[in-house]
Image (cartoon, rainbow, N blue to C red; front, side, top):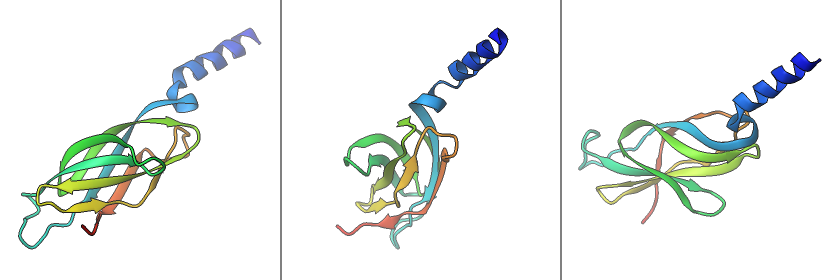
Length: 121
């Protein structure tokens, strides 16, 4: 019995953030459509992870038209919705659909956003 308790405590301690919540690394990939005047290779954009609930920017990374990058997010067991916005050097703005992030193992840690949608100015 003592051995089982010790093993159970070890598992809980080692799983840490994935059980309780905390900093979590996620992978985000997708593409940003090019304009007729900008080639896919030339486009530089700032990809921001934004809380759908508060509108706060939580993380930001420089990306190109085709991207696959990691971002850090504080997560808990209860899923929270986020979206990604790309502000590009040509002045255009793009947005993803909302994604749910949670520390529970049943939720994905890799998000393929597909092609982001251009926002109206």
